[in-house]
Length: 225
Image 1: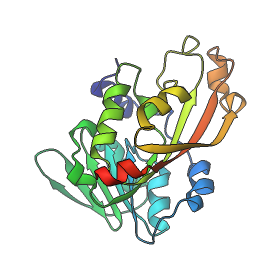
Image 2 (image 1 turned 120 degrees about the vertical axis):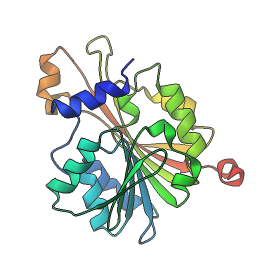
Image 3 (image 1 turned 180 degrees about the vertical axis):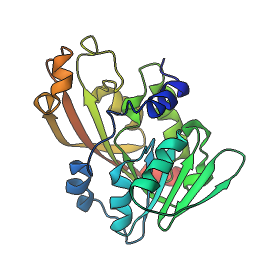
Image 4 (image 1 turned 90 degrees about the vertical axis):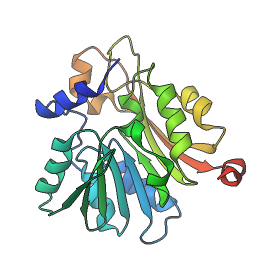
């Protein structure tokens, strides 16, 4: 199992191959399909220092992020030349700058009230950071804390025997098994991107599917909230 210390160490040692050098293209391409109102709140689990944070804020959206590493959060503000205020409560250190609100702490300490204003979830790097033993807890927690909101979910799928992870392979049937009760799930894209990831081919991977899902709350989920 990959524990919290593993991720803290990777940030300290700058082993952050999961950090994308630019705004995620799927986010830019797919966001217009979602019915987000101006100023809507977007939740990014395990947000790191993603360029996506600043991009979403530049579109006028409130960004709520949760990230374990204070180094990641402070690097985000420094690299984007943004000043911030920080506050501490019993669970998180809160960093605020304009439309951006980042919580430093453990994802599993989040409560429903922390995301009460959330209108949209963008999960690019959180689910695939969890190994198979951790993911049931992740799905359960997400289902318990999220208000009625659409989700853009990006996963990877590959032969887990060819690379141990992280990131981990998350098959489509698993996403359906854990989210279908609360969401209607549409596959927006699936592409074999192994040729775009030469370092992964070098370690022996022969294929790598990147899947993009749209999750829309179903009526029973809405009425339960």
